[in-house]
Image 1 (tube, helix red, strand yellow):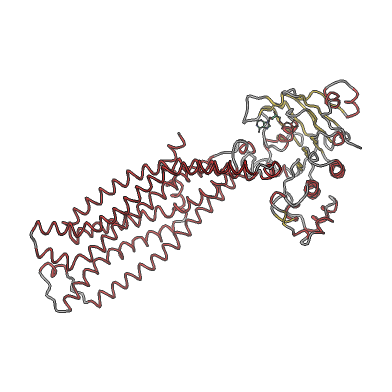
Image 2 (tube, helix red, strand yellow):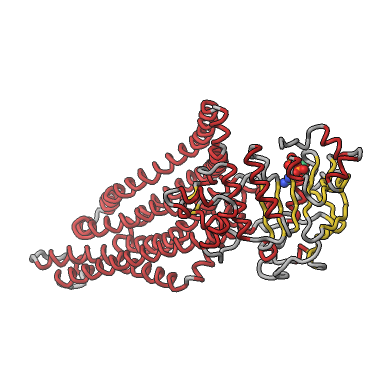
Length: 612
Ligand SMILES: Nc1ncnc2c1ncn2[C@@H]1O[C@H](COP(=O)(O)OP(=O)(O)OP(=O)(O)O)[C@@H](O)[C@H]1O
């Protein structure tokens, strides 16, 4: 509800765009000057039409009556034509300049907002994404910034043009024929009031449409994102029904909005016709009631064409009002969404611009009085208070049943999250919270179960994290990861674009590519989170051998279920379920000998035995 209230206010919109009108002040000045030129040119055309009617009459020897004598400026028809053509040229130049700069400003605003949101999104901490649909976020990034960019220019400039056009045309109706103008204005404002009644209703209904649309969009995008699950389950019919249901919801939300919109459009178009047709009728009634034959003949023979041109200008402000109010409704909602995205702050400060720069990770990594609960679910304890010192250069493995917190430790080391209590210390006295996170992560390698492959060529993928590497170094790393032969067999070799999410590679090949990335990065800390779990035994063996090589001389953390993965590490840490934390530790040989959690896991088959 609160959200709707916020959405209906347009303060946010004007707050956002005013900054851009100040930033690009020179465009603002150009737009303001062109609007002023429109006032001049558009006021001049009805007057010049009236004058040319009088000039042609006079030049053809028709006697002008007294009223016409007063109206006539005495200009020759040639002079009037020259002035009119000049006005049209000024108007054309103004229109070109106005359109060019207003579109430029719109795109500048859109791109700037998009950049700001995307920066905000990549700088958000990982918990930000735990309760959000990517589809919904992307709709906001693309559609809302575009709507805002369009509206940012269209709305203020159209307000400027329409308002000045309205004032000019309104005043001109009184200058041309004030008695008719009084009655014309009453009709005009009555229709305007009716317009606003339907407009308010329509906006309310469209606010609902927008929310439904976004939700449906998010659902559909996320659903299509699970295409492998759909394909592997053969649930195309089920999905077809689901997607149709989503669009049905979308359609139903549109119906009441469309009804109100139709009333609104009817008011605009029928209103325009009424305004146009009412003038001669009003004039006829007024002059016949007054019995003023001369005024009637002057109006119909001299002023009528000018009045109708001016009236068309007045009516145009009515329909441009529709454009403004609609753009405002769309841009208002977009503004609230955009500013909400920009307002969201990361829970932790990664010290992008300050913080201790890490050039090297030396010495032990100390977990001091660490306790952890996920900020998304603070009532649930995950890791009870514990202390542990990870010695430099040694390999560690975490085992334990599912949900015992193994991956959570990896996430703490990557600073996806800060500990709820306690500190992680590196380099003797540097707290992870105080480090410039990017400089720290430059020394950390992370390999997870689902390898992250970017849409890009092999070079780009392997260099990710060490962008200064040469292509030769990439090839060298791929040779060591034993994937060079495969890459070389592709027609485009290292320039091959790897499909979205690495579709064209097998699990083992993707993992080799990630290993090549790690070889190139040469991190001092290595975190392997179920890195080989998705692979079959033979491929697993080959990849594990590569990972074992990679682990040599680095402080490494392995999370695994397979015995072969953890058998050779220096130290195994066993975590208990239900937030018991560390329940046992030692080498593999020590742990299998003694009764305890590890032996239970081992015997229960939770540590998968590997066929040797
Ligand atoms: N973002 C999150 N918000 C709230 N709770 C979470 C979040 N991520 C994980 N958890 C919970 O934290 C607990 C530990 O999760 P974690 O992923 O560390 O377990 P794990 O030991 O690695 O399990 P597995 O072997 O199944 O991967 C689980 O109960 C899980 O439900």
